[in-house]
Length: 102
Image 1 (cartoon, rainbow, N blue to C red):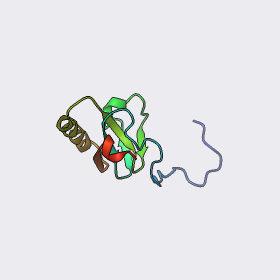
Image 2: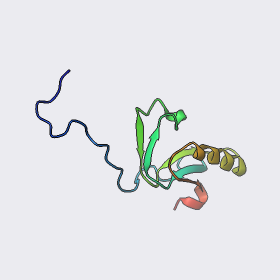
Image 3: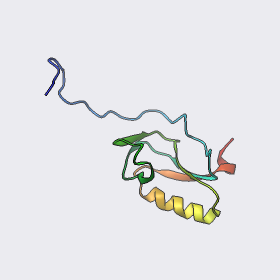
């Protein structure tokens, strides 16, 4: 196996996610969305709908829009997004396009 001749440390630490998200912060395609309020790593199992686009983990900054939906009643959208938020390990909140976008 190829190994560098000189390395200060054998294993690299994971680090941490800094700052807030600047892209993907608005409800663009649907009427309702699931917005992160916390930073963390989301596994591909947690986001099953996007599992092909995710390699191992997805770093998520606060303020990032994860899921959007439209064309359904408000109570149905809220219950579906609430169930989806239980599957994630970051704090989220449900936003409505008319109330959130500037």
